[in-house]
Image 1 (spheres, rainbow, N blue to C red):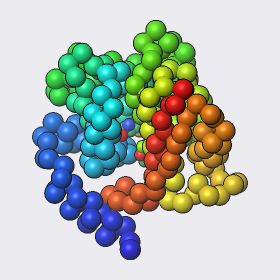
Image 2 (image 1 turned 60 degrees about the vertical axis):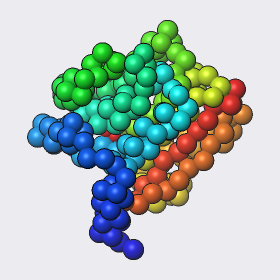
Image 3 (image 1 turned 90 degrees about the vertical axis):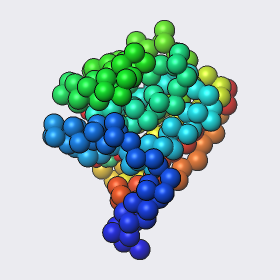
Length: 219
Ligand code: SAH
Ligand code: DHB
Ligand code: MG
């Protein structure tokens, strides 16, 4: 029961069930070489996102927080040919790396990386809505705003996933930092919102102790 064994088990699970993929591996290598932080989803979580998108037959995906496009590739590859991803990224340097990674993956035609503060970009996405699937994975203090926008930009049956809702257990601290306040406020909104039903799962693995929230819009 320690981070080393969590990583060993993640390595085992990934080598067992997540097929090796040179394009995804190169995306991570180039992200690292460009100095981007290694805070992409783990491969088994990327595949979870991919499977969820396929399970609901999503055609329109919104991602908040692109980084180098690693999770974006997992999401976009789950789409049918006519499917589209819009992904929002504040840092031009991150978006530039993502563009290259997405081009290498042959996904430039299906993915639009929009550069700017998500809170400024989200109101302009109404014409592209409703999205079938939303992945929220950017600045955690803004999670309440992103959840509210996700709800506006989806439809009954849509699925919203929010990453990093446990933060090594810090989520239980009522006086926690801005990230914890963002997560806790979002949890309260979800709990009070009759248009959604949700759960959250804590995870251990190669990225330590964290978790995700899984939300279904019910209408
Ligand atoms: N989803 C990615 C990881 C995203 S990391 C993956 O799993 O591969 C979080 C990203 O959100 C970073 O690239 C960061 O620059 C971006 N970000 C932070 N604040 C933001 C904001 N206000 N608007 C949009 N993106 C933001
Ligand atoms: C951080 C952000 C993430 O999206 C993540 O999955 C892990 C860590 C971070 O900002 O520390
Ligand atoms: Mg994350």
